[in-house]
Figure 1 (cartoon, rainbow, N blue to C red):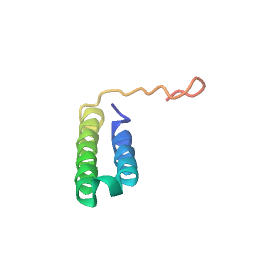
Figure 2: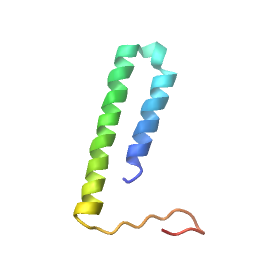
Figure 3: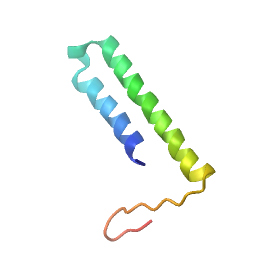
Length: 67
């Protein structure tokens, strides 16, 4: 869930580049704005969960690097 805002912004970027001319600029604009809005709300939820609620967050990065 913590990587969802990054994935959503990358997906909106790639959709706008790949399907920009096929779908039309109006629909691509709505779609990318919608994904960025969802990304914003997920980021707010993550902020509330980590900072306000003080819940611990452990991320497993790689075999040799622990945070």
